[in-house]
Length: 304
Ligand SMILES: O=C(O)CCC(=O)C(=O)O
Image (tube, rainbow, N blue to C red; front, side, top):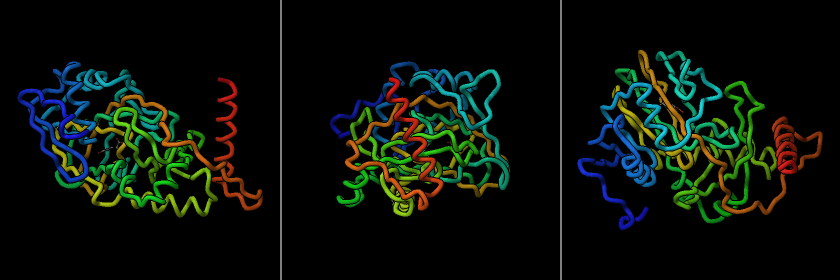
């Protein structure tokens, strides 16, 4: 968003940027009391900063859910245990050195046909030391690739799956570069955790390019690193960021989260290349998974 297009900040709010690439702390409002007007201002800030932090909030689960619903329909998480009677709310507890911590770069649920749109996370219990979270700006990661690399990536698609969650059958094919439906900007959309295979390349080529893009996406200068306090709420746009939790903490770390349902990623351009077809004996297991997914998509398209 350009300087001149910035919406005026509601009275009493203050915004402090946290890095040159993304992230801002917002103070002066109570999320539990927010309505559509505040949600519109938050949306505008999110489009500008991609991840927002609201210290000193400590919402109850119902306040957290109500705040999330201001931004769209909430989804339950297919790979995590949920909070009983509130299927759209989940809590994740980890003890330093043991327990589930998302210490691989990822954008949420890119293994789904419609990956999550945004996540709202409440740091319920914060370890005294460690357990920071990092986010990376995927607009910037795309924009700073060389022109030939951008042109190549624009025409590629990739297979994502949930094999880290022991659900390899949960998979989807997405463009490697997606266009944000609100800002119209292009961002890189592959991540280390969920992305398995570039459809148009051989397995070896895909491995090399995905390895490179995953390292590139995590370049320090695209990132912000946040040191939590209990009661802080963070909110990020999953369509143009990735995140990573540092598994270096001691003691307990408890987060609560709701997630706004996403949409199908829009491609920057149609792929000028067909899916890679390996000679049967040279095909890797990733070729088979990819070909099965392509056949499934074809059947689904034929039935719509
Ligand atoms: O615990 C965090 O800071 C982030 C958790 C995470 O990666 C997620 O909710 O997707």
